[in-house]
Length: 237
Image 1 (cartoon, rainbow, N blue to C red):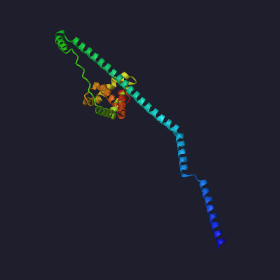
Image 2 (cartoon, rainbow, N blue to C red):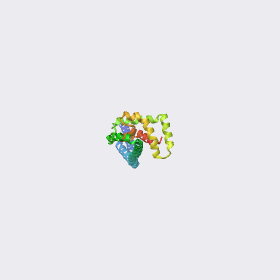
Image 3 (cartoon, helix red, strand yellow):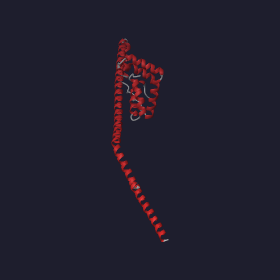
């Protein structure tokens, strides 16, 4: 009986030792969870550091692109203002030439009138010799400027009007002064009602465009519409 018990106890001890060895083997083959997580975090940091230069390069490229777009928009705005000022100078020159021509015609007519009839006319002219004060152009709010701009572009986009503008532009070739002389009266006629509805006479169209240009700064849609309006005024239709 004692021999049998000893044999049983010895078997159990061997089983325990065998399990302990196996457990030790398992522990050697697999690392603790905390160590695996730490290793994964280290690997993630290494991957982030590896792509950091590419990310920084991409961000720098985007920043440079934004700066370039801002500079280009500012350059376009200045170019548009310069073109408008050039158009205004041409319009002013044309108005001065027309005024001088009218004055010459009036002088010629006055010279042809008999002296006996010329005296009363001279007195009448003397009473109104002072030039009338130039009327100040109306002031547009941004909403009014936006409305006028949209309606003007819509008028120019009408098939019949676009055909007339294109034919007029082709007839001028590349002569800017001739374009002003031919296109401006045509444009003024098309926009007459629109300009008058906002308090402008036909010859004040460039004053209206300058105000619209001021309101269009920083407004992408208005700037796009304004570019179309300016292109039409320049004969690029």
